[in-house]
Length: 198
Ligand SMILES: [Zn+2]
Image (spheres, rainbow, N blue to C red):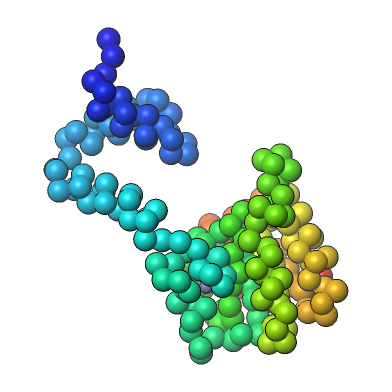
């Protein structure tokens, strides 16, 4: 027996999410059937809105619903430091710490030969462009402590240092293999304060 098309389609859609297999997708699809209509409508609208209303900041690559994100537009921030992260969610983690007052650059990925992701697939060209004005004095590389994160940091360091800009890497109070996303605020603060020059 096959599921009616609407539920089969919903199961297929849930299965496209990371970490969701057929069993979980089926459970979620049947749960959706039991939800109140207005909650389902809100859910569907939220899904469409993240794709339609959010895009990447034209300066730093963070997600925003404006052309340029709040942080890039904030004139009170220290424009001499750029902290480079892998994903938009890493910016949120850093901001929670409330100590860092510089700017960000979001790569939207890491160099990963295994996944076929090279430097050209990342938001690197726009970073190099930002470094061409004299304002920036330090670039802090805050990739995750994974093999791909280290390789990406090395690549960026080689690219940026010849320009005479100080390049630092977060100190690793962060355990190897760990994600910035899961580090608590104190650990992150220590990692920023104890950063080392590359
Ligand atoms: Zn921005």
